[in-house]
Image 1 (cartoon, rainbow, N blue to C red):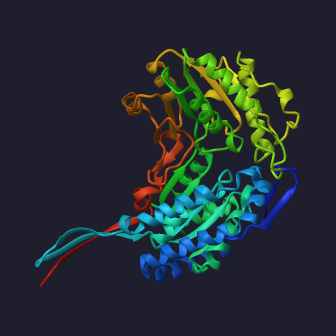
Image 2 (cartoon, rainbow, N blue to C red; image 1 turned 180 degrees about the horizontal axis):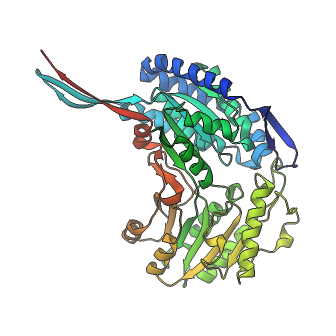
Image 3 (cartoon, rainbow, N blue to C red; image 1 turned 90 degrees about the vertical axis):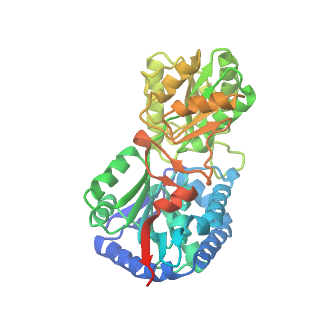
Length: 459
């Protein structure tokens, strides 16, 4: 029997483990979901929305358990209160638009013809959720999928194996039928086998690029719909007319929050030469002010990375950059808690360029490189010199300039004067190796349903 383990970054010990189910057990769970989905889809949409929101409310009642569980599983400090703000915001927004997003498109309703397009649930939706924001990333698909009439099978990353279990418990206790929303513990091979067997009608995966490739390979030839949110290397660009303090605070928070383990975290910054020195000075001060330590302690503002192997990759990228001429400006003596394992001090690098992995490969940790640029053209070329494309953060007082640059950017979202935020009213999507598809917004509902046309000639 394969055991799925969460090794806590807090102390390096096993925090939780669950047995992975075998293929027969998993297939039986999918069969129950498929049978239950038919009755679920027949319920009025108002009932489905109400039950999903009741599940959200029930999870909120578990806050005193959820927050320390997250700290133990993936290292986020308890002072930040978990993920409830974004979790609730996203759930409430999709609930508010569900009826309109799923309403039929009436083409004709005359004495002779009734013609309309309806949105029909796919059936069984498989959600493979990551560890970095395990509740918020999951709810992006879980809430609208259930509201649209799908059944959902949820599988979380091993690092946060308790999250899916707790989410399903909350939703079932609130009244969602237990076969309509199920959590399942799977190893990689069984996951791939289920997808290859066309067990699911839609698969949404959030994770690494290689993980996305594995999902695509498993789904090849099945015609199963896929939503993939994969890697990122999101840039910020600070123009000469930017609000300097606001830019530093927002971009550096975007680079360091959650120990840099954010899908849309800021991983590289380009600053106009007129503001460069001041920006760097303030950025170093910002990074140096963190308190690295045990995430269960209230004074800790920067916890360990989720696993020591993730921290090792960041250290390797930083060392390579320094070997090629970059300078690390944050004094390591300020962070004696850096143990060479999961606990990793924040770092700001200058004299960087695109020959260095820290400026081109996903770091997913508390390090950021800052480059000086002369103009928009240089910044645009550097921002697009990347195999990923999730978000870009532009800093200027000129909206027309930001829109003009944004039109040339190869990205899913263009921010102006903000960063590292998921607006549930907008489609969350990416380009290039960041993936395909989109969640939330009206488009999210469209991706979780299929169109069905009715052409009725009246006798």
